[in-house]
Length: 214
Image (tube, rainbow, N blue to C red; front, side):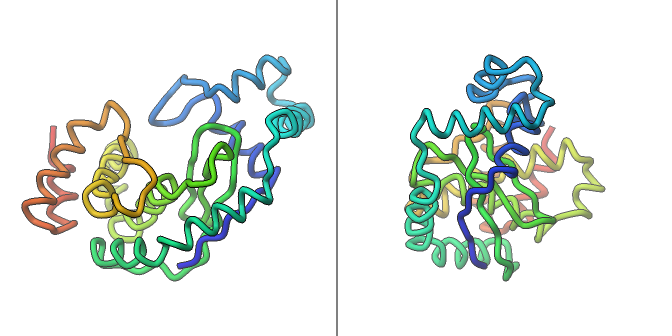
């Protein structure tokens, strides 16, 4: 698996428009950047105006996109192989693809397993924790994927796969720049997952314990 860090203006705009006003885990919660966009223009559906906002935001905040990409790549390359080895051991699957990590000003960092990309923040050079969180979802999809989403339904699958990132704190904390805290609504599931993992060290037992939780 190779992770490449890149800034793409259209991808940044896509992220801002699709996730800035809310997400499945934070419905109706607008990010600071999206609020700034609304203050900039009343027509957030006008992509030309949104592009103007993104360029102005980057200029005003002195965001050095190329420099950030280089720094992020260096930080990731220091831990990437160790992370991959641990993730493969835990999930029992390998990911051999090149995955692109796009920088975004949005304040949310979605991912796409089909098209092999995820987002990270332009506000810091050390995004290893964010990258591992998103890649954990890739490994979860490779291991449990479509069959579990069909069995559980999208909402339940989302809750369990988000809660599963608690394992990063137990197995990869030394590689991260910050703990993975998860969302408030998933804290009970995270505890179940952590407790089961520490007892079994088996990803399937851990997954199904969370799936069967009320």
